[in-house]
Length: 229
Image 1 (cartoon, one colour):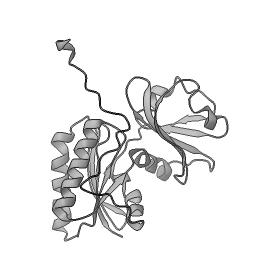
Image 2 (cartoon, rainbow, N blue to C red):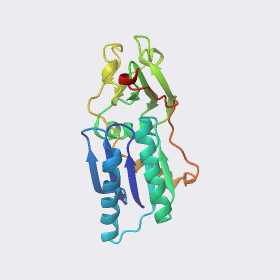
Image 3 (cartoon, one colour):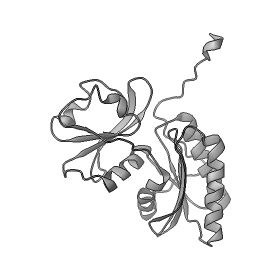
Image 4 (cartoon, rainbow, N blue to C red):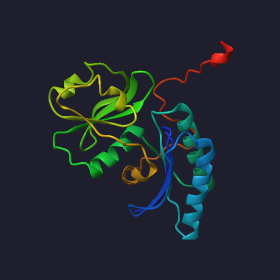
């Protein structure tokens, strides 16, 4: 087992956690709103100070790599790279939608044939979503979906599908199939990343620190402030 610094900034929630031997040993979270530029550096410094004060060698940094907020992902990946360079440790990139599945799989009693559809808000009626089975095998790759009453019918007509994440709430009125189930209050959090990060270490699935970029899925489009229009 390893000591891993986990960083999650893909949504408005900012969180940092350290794990050792499969257990969380440090957690800092700000659930109130986008504060990554202010909070992330403080949280990471506190996590590294905690690790150092307990003489625990850091083995890797894991970062939630998208899709999600363009600004949040950029800040999180930049911070992760900085720690990797400073500590000379490898970088792990964890897909954000997979991070969302961890608390659902850990704390919810799902039927064996359940499918999981984590959703991240992409504004208006669009979400970033993918479909997995309970073993995190991909049934449909991540995509930007405009949700309507016909969305995900190829899965809903066959088996139960569980929708969650900050993009799921706005889909309740559109997705009304009897096999559709919604789970509330599921956020991508750093403390939920360590099972996926441990697997990446076991598989030696590391990223090139120099060239790694977040998975934005869609290009960032800047809009002009209304007062200038």
